[in-house]
Length: 202
Length: 202
DNA sequence: CCTTAAACATACGTTTTAGTATGTTTAATT
DNA sequence: AATTAAACATACTAAAACGTATGTTTAAGG
Image (cartoon, rainbow over all chains, first blue to last red; front, side):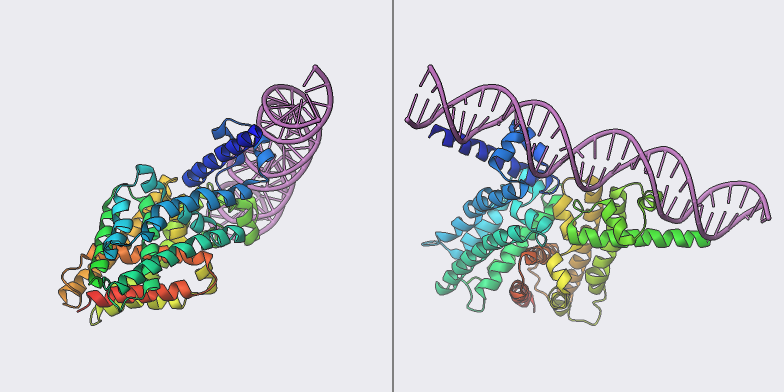
């Protein structure tokens, strides 16, 4: 039984280090020797626990990356009761961005990086990333719908369209920010989104 | 003199095929043998004309990719005289997207792909891509400023903030679209941006 | 305690790629 | 026409990566 724990622990170690390298260097630039050097384990350990890099990639998406999006951006949208919804949305999409670490600013969004790097070339990754985005879009749409119902957001707003614009702009900006060294882009993004949200708020 | 022409022609051939492969497979996944197979030339030809893949990458960015953005998205913003500027912007950012080829839908934006794939890891690419984006942001900001001056856009709008939101959302959506197989995302994006533009128009 | 299997480590074979070096052809110059 | 240099082609080297095969250690179970 204790062996199971050890196995799980090394698998998690490999997955965590893999995530960090995928995030820092990209999936394609990361090699299995790269990963195992970070873990201080051998190549034998890697192939004992995983079939190949692709399997690791899928588990990183389904685990670490999905959880990051869930914890950071989806779950916070779900407890909208007794809250002003435009304010909640503004908080999730613009306040949060201000407190990103330097790494998160320079390295962008792990999910969006993967989508752009191998989006159209790996159908298995594609499916996983798509259901992640589908979920995000869905939850945000529903939150916006609640905002409309609560008469906090204009009835003219199409919830899914707004959701997609918010998520799209957020990911786009996090990508473009990678080629800059200061926060001007983020600051302007916050301003522009605030204007949008204010204009559709009641 | 005719030799110069031939040299230029093969260089262009290599650059064009490189662009296609970078666009389709990504920069890192594209090898020099890959490129030369497409040109039906030998590896000797490659190293006769270029130092390495990185040099090709820089020339592809500065040439083909920059020109695509210029022709498709920057220059159309520059002749705003006698035009309704909100309409012009809407046209550039939403009408254009509807007529993308299937490849352009599945493969996203070449510039944004590169930004996300190697944005923070290659300082020379970074500089080139940044000046491209700077130019885009600048031209769009100025066009929006003209719209404000012409009393077609609300004075409450910060031109640079709006420019960055428009470009960011556009690139973000083009990225996310890569994991989908239909136009629902694009259609919702168009709707959401239209709402934004309409709300700030006078 | 002894067996056995899991958890690794080490070594190796194969393939791929970058880059070089050298050969050959073509075209410009004298 | 002969020379020369550019425009390629071919062959090769070295390094790196993937994946495997086989060894060794550790821990669980009878």
